[in-house]
Image 1 (cartoon, rainbow over the protein chains, first blue to last red):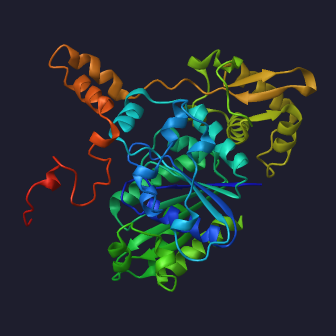
Image 2 (image 1 turned 45 degrees about the vertical axis):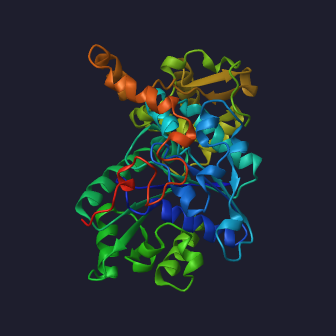
Amino acid sequence: MSKIISVHSFRGGTGKSNTTANVATLLAAEGRRVGVVDTDIQSPGIHVLFGLDETAIGHSLNDYLWGRCDIKQTAHDVTANVGGNIKGNIYLIPSSIKAGEIARVIREGYDPGLLNDGFHSIIEDLDLDVLMIDTHPGLNEETLLSIAISDVLCIILRPDSQDYQGTGVTVEVARKLDVPHLYLIVNKLPAVFDTTAVKARVEQLYNCEVAAVLPHSDEMMALASSGIFSMRYPDHPVSEQLRHVAARLMAD
Amino acid sequence: MDARSPEEPVEAGREDGASVFDLGELAPAARRVMRLMMRELELGYADLREAMGQLPAGEGVNAQELDDVLAQLTGQNWLVVSGADEGRRYRVNYRRHSGRALTQVTPRRQSGRSLGKTIWEALESGSPGETPAAGGAGPSGAEGSPRAEPSRKD
């Protein structure tokens, strides 16, 4: 049975898309067929990590939601773009980066039932092992829907008081929606922090397993979303932790 | 799991259909049924009964509870049913999604300078090549964007 994994953060800039792209790539590297949906319709960006030029985006998720095409037509095979030895496949369903289309979503909305239909159809059409949903920060309808239908929810936070508070809200919602498996990832931890202590503290605070504590990385910053970090720096401690995350999310 | 077509009867009652916003307000048994339905989109009665019976101890929904919940959820148009008796099938009926709060802001401004409407119209009428985001504008920016101006040290 296919697994649906949502990756969420209450606030923006936590590294949600970066983590999603890396975990998706690591899962595909092992031979899985992985779909990635960018439901951050208001501020899409994960296509950049997968090296998908916006001029190369034919149909997007927006087109599907407005009935212009089938969901399968929005899937872009980006396997060859990520580098490394990928035994499986990565299919990206990007959101439109055109200002007018983003505005239209905000202005007119869309049918959330159609989004859910699309998730199911793409799993079936592409015979996916895993569907990863890169969500919009905060809590809106598509995010709540993604959380509600997920087998696994991964919440990313930074060691920051605003993130701590917002993460509490998301954890509460996830528990209310009976999400089967919930994990936290602490990202961008400054070197002055003790990793073990932070992990223990966060787990105690939310009564939830921390799948990984990812240290701040200058190399990651320098890469600046121009590629998949774990493929460029496979021996880096961050890549090691990302491999642990990928394994943990698939373990249940 | 075919995508819903406009001809299907689920369009009826869309104004009061299911919304994930209200999922947390349901009683536990109804919430478990609704969550499974959202996950699977469409299920037969027998599959639903089996799935509810397989939930961990203390979370299971027995046959009578399930019937009560299904009657409640179909009654409030969260689920639509087709077929009859043991062969009946259920499908989620999502509430129609009608715009965001910003949509309501625009008309109020129309009495003034119609600023909101003008912005939306300008964005929607622009061709992809005209939008600042399109055309691969990187750090150097597209023409007319602040980044296109002579650089200045912060």
